[in-house]
Amino acid sequence: MNNIDSDNSREWAAQAYALLKKRQEEQKQELQKQEEQKQELQKQEEQKQELIDIDNRENIPEQSRTIAEPKLGEFDDNFTWSAMVLAAQGKKINQISIDEIDWLTKLRRGLEETRKGFVTELLDKLGDDPLTPESLDDLETLLIRADVGIDSTDKVISSLRTKLNEEVVGGEAGIKFLKKELKLIIDKPIKNSGTDVLVPQKGKLNVWLLVGVNGVGKTTTLGKLAYLSSKSNYKTLIAAADTFRAAAVEQLKVWGDRSNVDVISNQSKNADPAAVVFDAINSAKKRNVDLLLVDTAGRLQTKNNLMDELAKIKKIIDKRVPDAIVESLLVLDASQGQNGLKQAKSFAKTADLSGAIITKLDGTSRGGVSLAISEEVNLPIRFIGAGEGITDLRPFNSYEFVEAMLADK
Ligand SMILES: Nc1nc2c(ncn2[C@@H]2O[C@H](COP(=O)(O)OP(=O)(O)O)[C@@H](O)[C@H]2O)c(=O)[nH]1
Ligand SMILES: [Mg+2]
Picture (cartoon, rainbow, N blue to C red):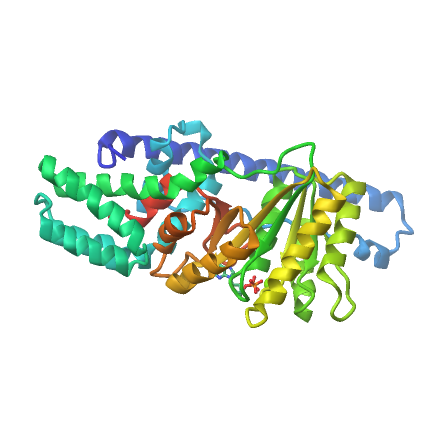
């Protein structure tokens, strides 16, 4: 951002805040009005039917499956920073939503640990002085410590070195240059894929397989994706193809319930995952589903089986819906750092991946691993998760990610 400290952008943020506040107030009043009307109607109904059966009335499903939408917080540094990140991407004041502000606030907070041993120290070291070869050595150490990976670090440092040979680079300009270089690294596989943001294609069946080792957050991510997808009006279905863990189906059903998405499963012990996918595809075709999300097992100790299983699932999809658009998304836990990178490399060898989803960016100091995944495994990052809540997942935006990772407060 080139205008981060200018009065203009603070003024801009203040105006955006005022507008959101007003909108929130109006929504509240509208909801209240609706509630009053509903109560009035109910009262009239009750008066009409004196014989109303109280028990039955209690059985009417509550409409309270709604997820708590994010609320507008204080007009503070978080808001201002988030608003400025949006402004720098060309958003107009009236295009900003509380959802976006809430997410950016979460992302920046989530990356605090990654940032702590990094930007703060870097800024301390650089101060306002121009960059020197020694400060590049420091930067190199910091990047490696933040799990950015050797290859990405080398790339960034050598670009900086070239720049230093040509001109004097001040501390602030150095950070700006660094952000640009990091963004280039993350953007490369995204550009190569030809798709900036992954969304289901309308008029076709899109099948997204979530793969990865146990505990990285596949099922949780799938739940969040189901919510995002159905909220965006894609007809969505879930296939519970992790038949290995008994609790996996129940866990998925809870997520499905929250986002009003059906779950296709097979309760019998050791059911064949490919058979579950088979059933789910039939069901998806019948219902004209846009997006079928497939949860898979992730036990590492029997890795060959796991890969065979994935291959079998893919074969079924190819056979049953040859024109389906299939995405194999590797889910990675950012807090596992270099270990996650190793997993990614091993999966990439055998599982024919098309993208990555990075989870648990909240509270880890290893958020930099996202760069290593882009550079060393060449996978486009499609979504990132920063929390256990249903709204804590968003399509990946490299600009926002790098800004959050290197935010200077
Ligand atoms: N803090 C945090 N926890 C997460 C996130 N995603 C998943 N988890 C937690 O990680 C644990 C394992 O998740 P699960 O979805 O069951 O992983 P799976 O074995 O890959 O399906 C659960 O306790 C989740 O709540 C995230 O983005 N942030
Ligand atoms: Mg799971």
